[in-house]
Amino acid sequence: MSETEKLVGYVTNGRFEDLPAPVVAHAKKCIMDTISCGLGGRKLRDMDIMISAMKEIGNAPESMVIGDTVRLPLMQAIQVNRVMTNMLDYDDDYMKVGHMTTVLVPVALAMGERLGSSGREIINSIVHAYEAIIRIRDAVEPSPAVYFTTFEQVDAAIHFGVTVVAGKLLGLSVDQMGDAFGLTGFVRAWRVTRPERAKRGMPPWMKITGGDITIPGIHGAYLAKNGFPGDHQTLDAGRGYDIVAGSDRYDPAKLVTSLGKTYRMLRIGFKFYPACRYTCSAIEAADLLAAEHRIKADDVERVVVKGQRHLAKNFGIYEPDYVIQCQFSIPYVVTMALLREPRTSWYDEGTFRNPRVRAFQHRITVEEDPIATKKFHTEYTAGTTVEIAMKDGRRLTKQVEYPRGEPENPFTEQDHLDKLNWMASHLGMRQDRIGKLTEVLYGLEDLPDITRLNRLLVHDGR
Image 1 (cartoon, rainbow, N blue to C red):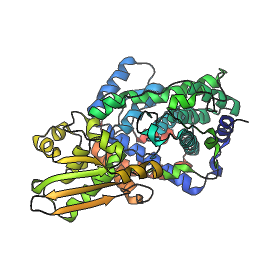
Image 2 (image 1 turned 135 degrees about the horizontal axis):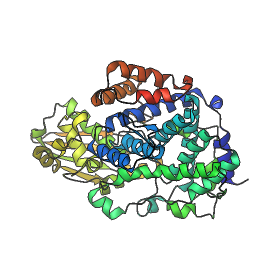
Image 3 (image 1 turned 30 degrees about the vertical axis):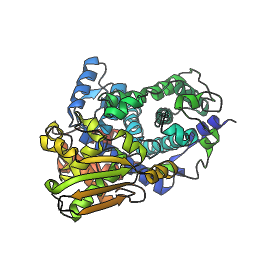
């Protein structure tokens, strides 16, 4: 039996009853966090545009949109919710892979509503999708030279996670899931060129088109269910996946390492700040310095942020022109921390175009710290040091290795509750409805039909 076949057998046959309690608890937190981010993301104008476009495309209104009253066809609702939950870049992620839950949860909720899936089935499908994605990424693992030059497919495994969620909820057999993997693996993921990214950050269309990552896995699962064949060895050595992923040392043996024994999804972390995870340690360091020393922005002469090479090369963006540029701009997000700007207004156009905000960003520089670069590649940490030179001659320094929400510095239960309440309240949801939503999320494994949760996600004030 090949490595692909072993992985497929594991995710197909995996049962909720065999999941350890900490795994179920962490999966529920991931689902709650993603819903929180979706409610917050609904406020952005880009989502108005996307929903209007999907309504114009038309067809049967069958699936809910987070934080809205509109219903869309299954595939379009999944795409909208996938984009919405990632729009603030506030969603959970796994350092090696990026954002998984923001892709998997929209698929699970929409398909679960169509199929009448239970909370246990939703959790089970998502957990096994995590394990497939992370092991595929472990198998890819490029060398440092390739990672920092040509490697672009950090999230190339995520569409296989969609296959797992869709396939498990559809009740595919092992043979059918093998077909689905083969059909999904045939699709090459979207790539962004490094020169464009290094120059001005992620393009404005990056997240809108990112909803398309859900399509190959869903198509693959339905095609397999209806008898269409696929390559059952698609992830094995010599089948070309290493070329698609851009890896120079692909090792398919890692696809099956510790399956069912070690749950890598427990390393998924959460964000206290709405920005790219690579920036969060810098934001927290600046935030802590501002609070500890009661820093007033006008008294700051200059700020130096030191981090891993990727941060120094690609995140030194000044005066961003749109939301995604803000989220990937160290000068901008550190400015937000030092100006003590409320997180709910970080991405208001009036904030990022404010002349004072734009001027202050030019006091901030981003430099590579070779030690941080080495740790980023060997340990997958994104620690950052912030040095502030004050006009009165003081030199203030703070180093943050693990920002709030990392597995080494985890969220408390209250952090999760606060984030949900904050995002839902910011959208305008009533407190009694937020209370019911919280209750359902905490008891998700006892929910007989996911439709009850979906109904609570429709914003009652819109």
